[in-house]
Length: 111
Image (cartoon, rainbow, N blue to C red):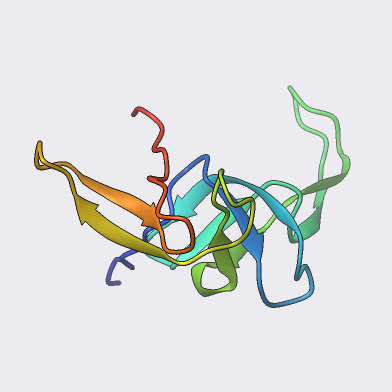
């Protein structure tokens, strides 16, 4: 499978713009680039029926399921709105994400 190119990263705040959880917001927990999906906290809750094992108790566990990247929109820290982004190259050669509404550089977490 081909990897999907995305501007979203782990720990970004995003809002769901389509689907059953439309309007919900949360942080990205993980990104599945081969499938083009992301897991967002508190969004697309699914129920897993698990058997008891040697180290875990069985039962019905609720956890987040993956959401397609096209249904997510980045939330700007300054505007507090879901926004489109553009790329800008700084003087030192670093490529950063910039909010199209307010022009603020969107912070990226250190790896």
